[in-house]
Amino acid sequence: MMRLNKTLNNVNTPILTWGNPFEANGKEVIICVTGNPGISDFYIEFAEELHKTLNLPVIVVGQAGHEFSVDNEAISEKNKDLYNLQGQLKHKLDLIENYVDKKTYDEMDNVRSLNNEAIQKITKKCNVIYSCNDGWAPLDYMADIKKQHPHLRMVEAANVAHSFVLKSSQLVAEMVSNYIKEQK
Image (cartoon, rainbow, N blue to C red; front, top):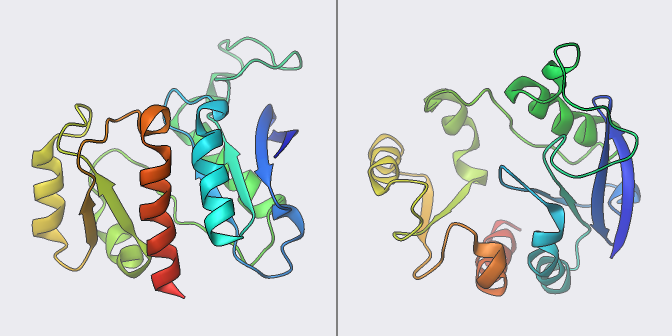
């Protein structure tokens, strides 16, 4: 594992890497974006397991402004656009478009409501893992998504908390790894 700092969308950002995602030579790269709030260190065990199982480079990137950096200014009126939802999207796109091998891509959209068109585009590449005891993502939401997108792969992770990286990293990493292997 390496700890690096990259300036993404004008925010100095600590990132964690396994392998070399910046010179992947056209190979796949796994990009793990932390939750909100997101501290990248919470994802170490999860990312290590993905890297070990799949032998692919892994990047863990947190949310802009959620981890301390001496170089970053405090959030103020003049820079608040760096940290709002649109700023967070630009932050991740900067990583993907300017640092990660160009073959790597991701679908990002403005999340304000269920975007059926965006989900339709990524159905074949998407694996939704949810838990009935999550507490943050109501099961009604999962039922709605299943109804609207019956071909979307949705897997329930039994006995996994919302903060899966604290107690269930290996289990969820195994689920993600199996899905990625099936896609090859």
